[in-house]
Image (cartoon, rainbow, N blue to C red; front, side):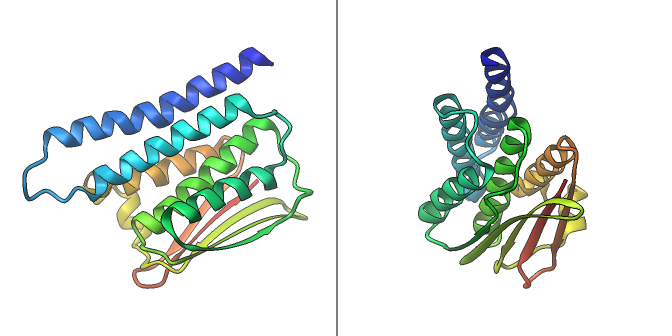
Length: 195
């Protein structure tokens, strides 16, 4: 069990912190005096979040409920970005440790995107289970975006959004589950994972 945990943390450090730091390094070489730095600052925030999550994973018991992990991570993000947070979390949702970790990471990415890219002031996180299985839903009041445009890669190099959305989708598939993203410019976003 310890070896599995260490391997999971190593994967997370590679997929999270190392990827973000590599992105920061590449983007830093291209900086000029006129270059906007928001995308680099966003990558720094994501790398710090990844590092904190890895440290917490190493120091916490492996049986913590999904709802508790989501609540703690969501409150940390809400405090950092000074956004209003609404939580509706079902404590009875049971998942494996790997699923729990993936779902918390998806929630963190969705909340970070809502604030960093969407300039959201209010974020709602719901966790429940129904006849079809589990569902995690993150809704925000941000400025929204064209989902197909971002996923096609048109803006991925400019602001890093594409990488985060692709990462969330891959994590959802690994549950196994499905990620759905609903958004339009000027209308906020809804990220839903079902498994």
